[in-house]
Structure formats: structure tokens, C-alpha cells
Length: 268
Image 1 (cartoon, rainbow, N blue to C red):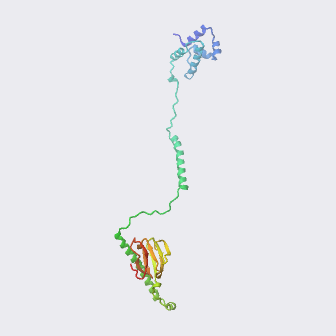
Image 2: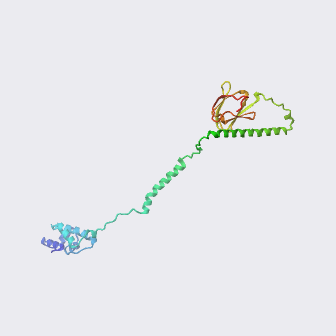
Image 3: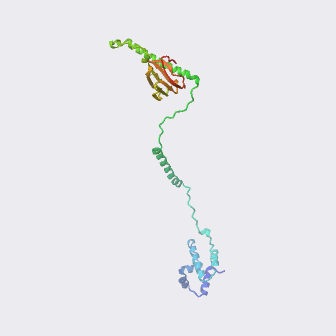
């Protein structure tokens, strides 16, 4: 059985071609032609190039190129799997690579949240009151009595202090002042608001004297002879005193009054 080198050499000689002629026509060095015709095996890293030269040489000699190539492979135990090294794909399952992917997103999120907290969001300084259920009705009279008694006690203490000061005051100017008669026009009515309450006062000509929401512990005073008409949304929050004497509340807790007049007969 002829080898590849023998086939090429015999074919070239039959065509009366020299090695120099082949080298000149195919632009292949003399050493490579000699390697092919002498069946000299080169290193695995150059065998692919050698196969290319064999293909050119075979085509030039009008040989069956495919058959020559296959025979060369069988002759030299050529195996692609042993000569071609595949480069494996790079692995991205690396902590550093993962950090490089997540770090920009984390930084963007941090900057956005910081900007929102510092410049966009406005703090709500308003007080939010919790909703509590109303007191049962059985406790309302107890609370009202306590408030009235507290005001009566406070007024009594003030009166006692005034009496004590009067007895111990030896000023002649005070002693010579005539005592005022307790006429109706001299009586001073004071409305004290135990809780925030809306009130309106009108005179005989229906002119509005005051119409507003009074604050807790706020007071309003006027002479009894003015006979103001009182309208309120919660009479139980209004404590009435006449010349610093507590007369009681204007009405019951939650009671609405309209055009009510306080006179000498008022007592609650």
C-alpha cells in the first residue's frame, strides 16, 4: 500500500515535474514538499498548515484531494479532538463581579433617598389628637359638680382675702370712700368658659356684640343692665358669676341656648 508521500512523488515523476517546478507554481518551500513526499510528520501545532499544503499539492497534480486528505489522517492517526483545544467560557460567578453589578444600583438608591429626606419631604409639626369615646352620661353631672365646686371654692378664697385686706387697711382714703349701693346696673356679669365654646351676644337692637369661639378659661364681662341675648352651642361649658359670686352654669352639658338673658333671678 502506497503512502501519501509515495503517491505524490510517483505522480510528480510521471508528469516529469521537478520539486523546483512545484515550489515555483504553488509558492511552497522545498522543505515542505520534501516533508510531504517523505511522509515526515510535523508538530501537532503545524499539522493544520501541512494539510493545507497537501490540498494545494493534490489539486495541482489532479489527484482525488478528499481521498488524499482522509488517507493522510488515517496514516498519521489524526484526531481533531486531540489537536483542537477549546477555550472555556469565562465564569461570571464571582463575588467581585457581582459586587460591581450591584454597587451602582445601591449608590443610586442611597442618593435618591437622601435627597428626598433632606430636601423634598416636609415634617408635619401639627399635633394629631387621638379620638377617644365620649364619657358616659352618668359621669357628666359628677364632673360638672366638681367644676362648679372648684370655681365656688376659688371665689370664696378671693372674697375672704379681700375681707381680710379691708379689715387690716387703715388708710383714711379708703375709709372715706362711700360704699356703693348694689343696684342692678352696677352688677357685673362674667362668663367664664370651662372648655372651648362658641358664643354670640346681641343687644336689644340685635347688633352683634361678640360672635366667636372662646378658648378654655377665657372670660367675657358686661353690665347686667345691658341685657345681652346669649346664644351658645354648649351651655354646660359656660360658668356665670355676678360680682364675683358664682351662680352656676348657663345650662346643661351639650345644651344649646338661643337668645337667653341673665337677670337678677338667674340661678342654676
